[in-house]
Length: 116
Image (tube, rainbow, N blue to C red):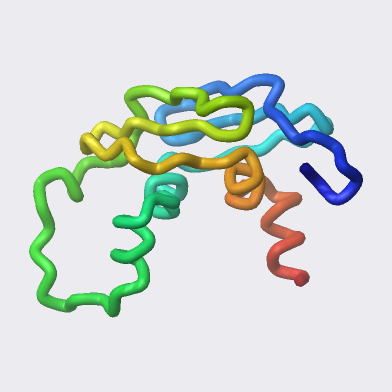
């Protein structure tokens, strides 16, 4: 819920080109999220732990890390989230509606993030 007890939910989710997700929200906002941005912000425990580790300058990339991230499916989880299955086989991240909105990369949201 948002600050006014208004239930936030997407009216539609659409693929935009090969690299983005377009979300039309019920409050009129149109959000855009890049697949790479979504995959890089996966909320699962394993991915969060990996992001919290210091960078390893000697890390050898796996073949799956060289592929541009793309979803193979978006599966609703109740009325509050989506589970994204990625082309690298990863499927344990559950993206709540609030987290999808917070990760929005539209100009309006980017402007708000840089001014706060």
